[in-house]
Length: 193
Image (cartoon, rainbow, N blue to C red; front, side):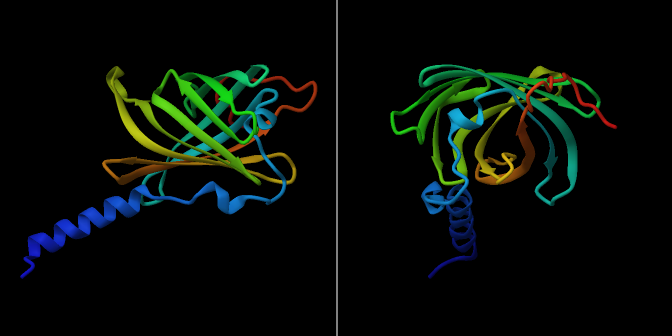
C-alpha cells in the first residue's frame, strides 16, 4: 500500500526528472537561418535583457557586451554585464573550442563550474552549464543553466537562459543580442534613453 508520503516523494522525484530534461537541439536541424558559435560571435555582440522570477515578474534589467577573438577553431569571448543602475556586476572570460563539424563545441568560463557542451542545429545554439552567479556580499550561488540562442532572419539572436537549483526553476534571463554594425562602437554600462 502506498502512503501519502511515498506519493509525495514520487511526485517530487518526477518533478525533478521532468524539470531537468529539455529540448534536444536536433529538433531544429535544417531550419534557417543557420547559426554557429563562430559566425554569431565573429565580431562584438551586445544587447539588453531581463531577469524574470519563476512567476514571470521582471526583477532586473541588464546590458551585456560580448567581445570575441578567434584563432582557427579556438576562441575567447569576454562577456560583461551591467544592471540598470549602471553597475558592472558580472564578468566572464569564455574559452571555446569548436569541433571540425562547426556545430559542436566545448567551452570553459571563469564563472562556470566544469565544462560546457554546446551544439548548433539550424537556427538554434544550445549550451548547458553550471553557472556561478554573484550574490550580495560577494558570495556566489551555482545554478544549472539551459542556454538557447535563436537566430532571427535579420541577424538578431534571442537568448533565453532557464536557471534551476535542485531541479527547481529559480528564474529566466532573456536577451536580445545583435552584432555591432560597421562603424558602431560598444558602450559600457546600461543606457536608458
